Length: 124
Image 1 (cartoon, one colour):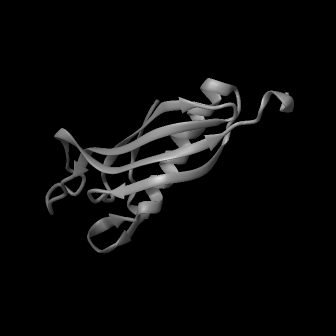
Image 2 (image 1 turned 120 degrees about the horizontal axis):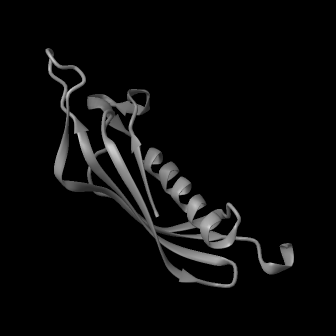
């Protein structure tokens, strides 16, 4: 499952246009929700993260790609591997404030693994 999103300047939280890590975790929740809808017909709920690694900065003006891979299925739990990559980055100049560049190789900014839960058959 893959989502792409432009990071609006309103999400900048720190100097240099840096975006806080919670932004990426919110996107992980969005892609996990679609995964649950597709696999179980329910939005599901995020139960826990086992690991979260912030590996590179996400900045306002970036275009990010968020991926979720289903790695294990339990009766009501679904384990996911998650990754947020920067695929384009703002490259503003005084003469071109909206300039941006596609990155030759996506920059892995955040990796995580976590568990979502969905209702069991008894909920139907």
